[in-house]
View 1 (cartoon, rainbow, N blue to C red):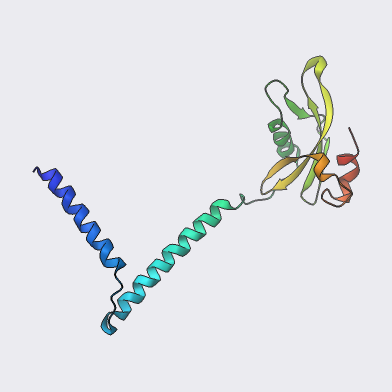
View 2: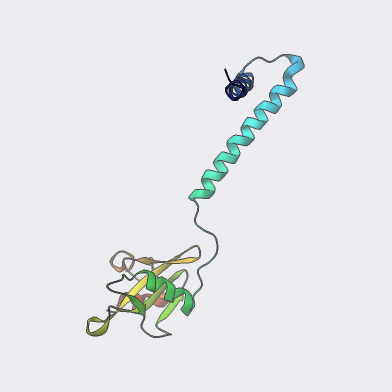
Length: 154
């Protein structure tokens, strides 16, 4: 048997023994503080794991900014290589209470057309929404302040 195998076997044996000791249920009155420490460590590890899972499921922090640069980026992301999207004009958007609309030029050349896209703020990002689903009535989802241009245009 070579030394590398022996060292690896010894390390595995020691780790296994340490795990078994931690799993034991033996407790005496003299060993109560040790058991409390083990229980506390296990509870802390579980809480840390739960917190990490919760953090991973949460949205990215921050607030979506209602400015030309942010909405231009959101508009461009809705396009494709075949049909790129851009803001129709520098002021062709408006925001209210975490919602925005933008007049969007889609396509290129003679195939270009202008339409309306509705966005909802999620964290620091503007997410495009299906107008048929969010434009039910003023204030239902899309705020009254922007409902007409967001929902009752092309």
